[in-house]
Length: 270
Length: 194
Image 1: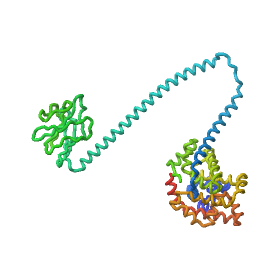
Image 2: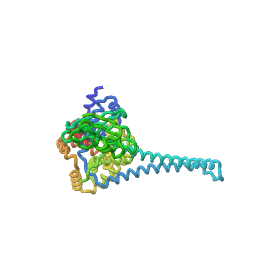
Image 3: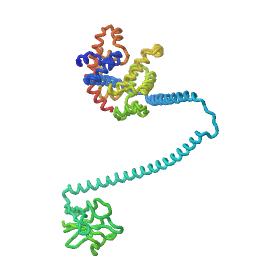
Image 4: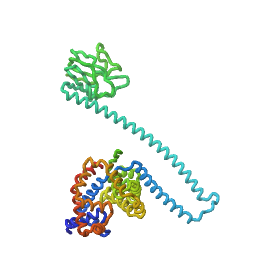
C-alpha cells in the first residue's frame, strides 16, 4: 500500500484526536502494526497534541489530590465489597448442617488446627531467626563499607605520596623467618618524614607488636611502633638513614639503646 | 504557588504499578500529570468546581480502565489525556451541566478562565505558551473545537458553514503546524518531566 498517501490523508490526525469512526480506528490500528512508519507518524501526532495540552497546564487546587486519592480508595474498597457480597450470595445455596457433636470433620479440623499452629510457631521462629541474620548481615555490610572507605582513603593518600615526587620508596623485603612479608617505606628526604604502607606481615601474636627501625650510621634507631591493621602510618622522622627494618617485639617495643630484641621480619636498604 | 513534585519513574514501571492497581502508582500519576489534566479539563468545563469533580471522575475511570491501556498504541500521557478529555466533554454535554450553566453569567466565565490561565506556570518559562499564539487562528480554533469541545468533523462543518473536506485538510495542516512548533520542544519537556 502507499503509506505516504495514507499518512497525507489526515486520517491519523482524526484517529489521534479521537474523532475517527470505529471502523477507521480498526483500520488505523491494523495498519500501524504492519507499517512502522505509520506507527511513528501516530506517535509524532500524539506528541504534538501532548505538547499542546501541556500549554494549558493549570495549577491544581491543593486539596484536590486527597479527594482524588479518596475516590480511588473508595473505588478499590467498593470492588472488594462487591466480591464479598457475591460470596455471601453464593453461600446460602448450601443447606446449613446441624452441629452433631464431634463429627469426624471437626476432629480432622482440630487436628489440622493444631498442626497449623505448630507449623506457624516453627515458621515464626525461623522468621525471627532470619530477621536476626538479616540484621547481622546488614551490620556486617556497613562494616565492610566503612572499611572500604578507610582503605580507599589510605590508598588515595599512598598514591598522593607516590605522585608527589618528594618521597623515596624503600621496599623492605621478607627475611628468612617470613620470606613472603613485605613493607613499603616512603621517606621524604626534604622534611625527613617517614611513612610505612602496604604492610604484608604475618598476623601479630598476642602481646606482640611490630616495630620499625631506621639504620643510622650502622646502628638501628627506634622509628616507632606499627599499629595493628594500619594501612598507612606516619613514623618518626629521620634526616638520614641507610636502611629500614621491621622487627617483632613485645608490646610497647624496644628502645634504641637496647636495640631490636625480636626477629627481623623485613629489611631494605635506601 | 505550589512546588511541582514530579516523581521520576519510567513510564513502563508506572504502567505496571497502575495496572496492578497500586495506589502509589496513582499518587505518582497525579503528581506528574494533574496540572496538565486539570488544565485541559478546566478549559472544557470552564468552572473550577466542576473541574474538580471531573478530575475525580477521570481518575476513577483511569483506575477502572487502566487494564485496557496498551503501550504499543501510544503513550500513557495521551491515553490519560483522552480519558480526562472525554470525561469532561461528557460532563459538558450532560443535561445537568447544561441546566446549571444556563444560570451562570457569561462574564464570570471569562474571568474564571483568565484567572486560571494566569495561574499556570513552568511552561511559560520555556515560552511554549507564546508559541500557541503563532498558530493561525483558524488552526487553533479547529484544534480547540475538536480537542476541547468534542465536536465531530461534521459538526464543525455544519456550524461554521465550511465543507467537510476543508475541515479535514484544516485539521491536517493545523496539526502539522502544531508539530512544527512543538515537537522539538515537547521532546525536551517530556524528557524533563520523566
